[in-house]
Image (cartoon, rainbow, N blue to C red; front, side, top):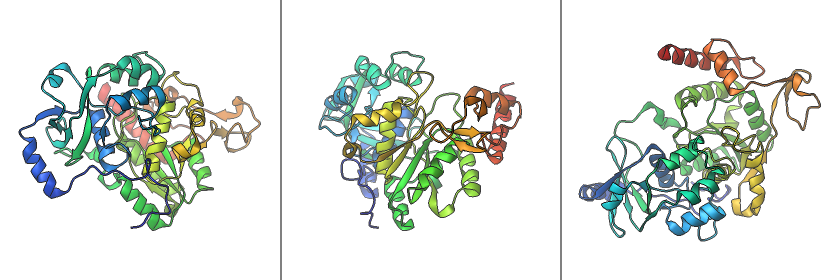
Length: 397
């Protein structure tokens, strides 16, 4: 199906690293004699994102020239904008068994053969370069920093040939019905006649402020892609299956069906704030979206980033280099005086008129079986969250 009317993928073409079934069968047989690398959850997520073209123009785990350039300049060595290095870290023991010019089998933690990497380089993992540049902090309390610190001291680089992205025992969290690769979302947008599509990134249930942002975006775009991240997140985040139930209920009752689409993004969170906002935008460009919602503290955690740093970072690039249009929204909330959703741009009233709930306060209410105010979240969503929170509390008691 033709998709010329949609935005071009990052780098100009959509990468596909999944090989055909006949080649996959032969490669799997060859892989039996190869050294193997068992992927971490983050690495398995990255593998899938590269395999399907979501990380276009990457064809594999990055080499040293790209690693250094990404960390220092937010670009690949050839100058293409890319904000976070996608790496395959291994420890000393694994590294000792590998050589450039060889191949290695990449396996899921359950033993499933996922892919083969053609090893071009093995180089030291320069965490002193990566961590402060990518995360803006070296504090190991930051989940992204800790994840990198816990990784191996060597990076294996090279293109990948992917046999499958699905482990042998498929968990319910695969969300197969909604796990659409970029080629499929592009087909769906074209079939619906959408030329402009806004993407909404989330790792949380959608509350009233999020709903407001997506509907504002729909006033200027043909459709909206609700695109939750369902890869690796930090402990304490609401599980993906609970969130998916919330999204489906909300879309069914409060969104226009032929203007709304739900799909999942199997990426891992880095919690890298501004840099991750750029990554999330480029990924949605690959999925075929022309616009991308960037709200308050996008991809942030704790107090590591300024409220709107993730919006300001887009100003560091020529708009044509990123390609996708960021939609920059102020912090939105219900205003009792205005009797509706507002932001600082649209409402003259002070914070005493606003309905705000911190994440901590919200979780306390849910665990107590108390319904958050409907000005903060839809009652149907609150029902799902209360059931989850009280069940979690019962298990932990």
